[in-house]
Length: 530
Ligand code: FRU
Image (cartoon, rainbow, N blue to C red; front, top):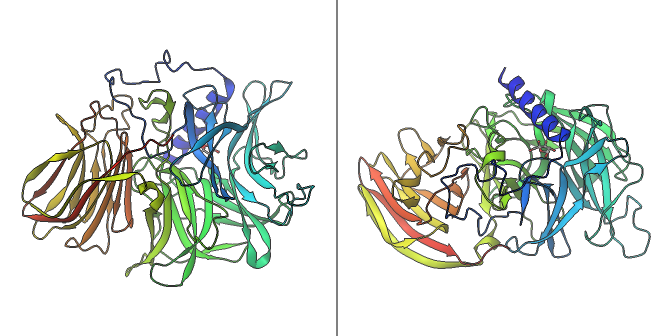
């Protein structure tokens, strides 16, 4: 039942937005700004990616090439709500400073009134020129693979087909392949291709989601133009929502040389009825993914605002990282969040690995913010040991763009934690609860929330195998986003927050006994991203 409701919401959303191409004025649009109590606070984060203007959702086409991390976005060039989907482009050499260069792959308008919006997808570096797009020596094609969402003149859904565009100038300009689409199964529910090179069998691999049946199809190709169906994976784990944005990557198990394949999809989270991402661990032979027997569903992040995450292609093996970027938002309220001048932001890029755990789960995903995001941090406060037995306000430090790190020993305390973005009665609270074995993020008092009844709430992660006398905690705060990483990112919670005042106070607390916060550091981020 729930799934049907969500499918209908997505279809309605797609249909409604396909059928009208309104240019939305950020000032007069009542949905932009949402809650009118918001006045003086800038919600634009300093070290999280936002577009200069307009709407973004999923990150697309993540490739590293020649010193640049390319980041494309599902983008509406005309407004602050979803619509006219096109790929916007940005590049960075360090995951911190991004140069946005505008629309790279625009929506297609046909003479007969039908349109093809450019939906999510990926990009590859075709080093061997398997596609034949390079015509001169030394040219290396970058190839973007994406879904064309084809609708008729009246906005009626026709099909979702997979198409390619290529660039011969390192991503500066893009040309659509004249024989698009490269894959069409006659379905309106077939999207978000993730393509990568599988070296052992010298083949391109494409994963495409079949959202309506919660499955992922796997194809092979030798030239990126002709694709052969190989296998299906799906209908396991959480199938309460549609599956979108599949990805498949190989990760190393912490402290070992063991590698496992991880297949992740968006749709299916611990918060039923909301977005979320889940993952499966197993093996892959180039054409078929086989999941290990495990305690599924396994969730990537336990907040309400972590969706459509996909990983970079072509990061050199000398670097060795698998880096994921996700949209920090939720379809339930993404169109009404009260930001001005832009709408949509990405969580910090996270380096992924696995941890072996001693229970039925087998392995657990670890997520660490990439080190590059710390390059403009300034030490603001540090204290080797703070014992807290009620509430302790840290008067000498505050801020709205912070990297807070500490170890926590709860001893006989029942709960302990930290309030951030505190101002008057407003605060966002992160609590470790020993009896529940949970980490919780409470945004019920975080500030503006009247733009959606789905927003306010307490998110929690049930934690297995954790020692409450030896927890590592890292909390990234950036104007309107809080990301919590417990035990080196074994459990993460990502949530948007919209404080109405920007005082950014911090306090520590415990209940039921004394908790020890050690190696406590607060760093402030000093430079803006753009
Ligand atoms: C995920 C998604 C994708 C689709 C895109 C459209 O958030 O629904 O499945 O390609 O957004 O913008």
